[in-house]
Amino acid sequence: MNAAFSMITIGFRRYNLSLINSPYRTKMVTAGVIFGAADAVCQTFLEKSENNAPKKFDWARCMNMVLIGSCVSAPVNHIWYSKWASTLVSKLTSRVRVQPFVSTAADQLLVTPVTLSSFLFLSDYLKDFRSLKAAKNVQEKFSSTFVTNLKVWPPIILANFMFVPPQMRVLFVNVFGFFWSIYLSKVQNN
Image 1 (cartoon, rainbow, N blue to C red):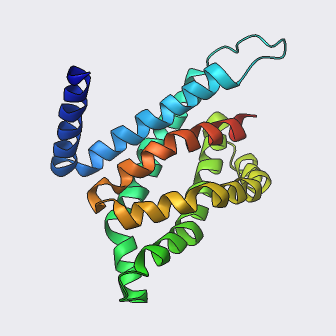
Image 2: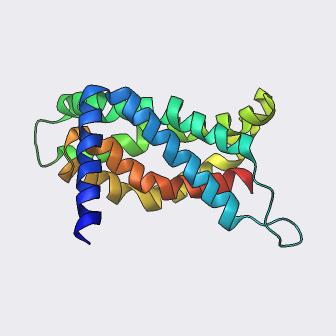
């Protein structure tokens, strides 16, 4: 038990050092791994073929998720959590106790629609590079997925802004994002 705890502590320290030395790269790699792992879990455990047998693993789909996580989700989250959120909120209110609530509202009403639309568009577009089809995918799936988002994410985001140090906010969101990415993969590929 002590050895496992020791390894986790060392890993956490190395991750933290990596965040300090290369924040973008670290967050891009982390998000890519999380998105890819989430899709792999979805494909392996949640999806079956028509005869209820396991489906053939779709590596292109998994790599598309890695690409979206690394090149879209990570940079947006990095900029939002480390720069824009605090800048925007400080312009809206100086009351420190209210700021996490304002940050959460801004996250859910400004950032989430953009990132969710981007995910739905890109994950469809990267299949066959047809932009009209991808835009239709956003139209069909955005509303119900956004409503589900509003049922899940606000308390997580509020806790993130209230209790998590700024440099660890993307990691905190990514931990929960693993499960959200499984859901998104299922919605997108159902």
